[in-house]
Image (tube, rainbow, N blue to C red; front, side):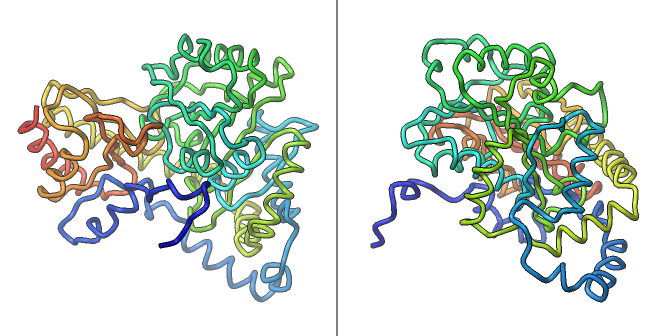
Length: 394
């Protein structure tokens, strides 16, 4: 028996990963993935660019690179974020291997064993495991319709927190968006504790309804606060296989992350960075994102229409204005794992809600649904199947 380190001995595989063998069944309709639709990938454009890169820039794309990132790509990312009002002069920037590495590096440089890390409850599994792996004492604060419960955050039990992790826009897994007022209140509450806020924003550009809300980073910059670590990614707007993310924070934070990244992977893959850079030079990435938003709006409308038709009235479902997910909860007679097993028996895969809880042993009947990955014709059939399961258990 292997004597694993204290950092990893209590880590378990993601419930989502555990579902993969089930999802591979041809008759299974999966709402379990957290993936963008392959229909959105710019495959033809990448194919054209990739050949030219190998022939004309192969000495760069196939070589080691700077840990901070490929300089032309970094400049494009800076310019794009400046236009969005997220990056300001004096900020630091690090290109990472997906947004996940940004979360992991932030946890690594900020957390000592036993430090208090606070998250939304429910929250993103990869973030929760990054904090667990670094020995954090993880505590969740329940979500309300407009975001995290600020009154609870202000309570004395969280006065000593070291960091707060939030996905304020189209939250994973709940799909909700934190109001601007609540973002201001969150900044005010955290400022009193000297903690850092990790603002994870992988879905913010995928809005298909409603009004834009400023990022927490933008609101913090108005007051000249420097306690926000902003994490973004190209996984949801170009391709997750590129493994391209970025972190915007103070130079001091970025410098320490860079040193730790050198020990992790030396640098983010050069071929991916050069490919993304050339794509952004030649094509309109905003037009690409607009097409993705339109597709997800269509799929979301199909799912919500089917839910209204086939789900029992006792079930509550969030109504996101963008992103990839919605959250289902209600007065059901079974917990989420029983619901998941019953759904699989009907040919539908979902993710049990306890996978997203700070306490993975928490009892809940909630579960997450993804509408971006399944085909439009699968959504109606899958929701009808799931509706039969929920009607039996309600």
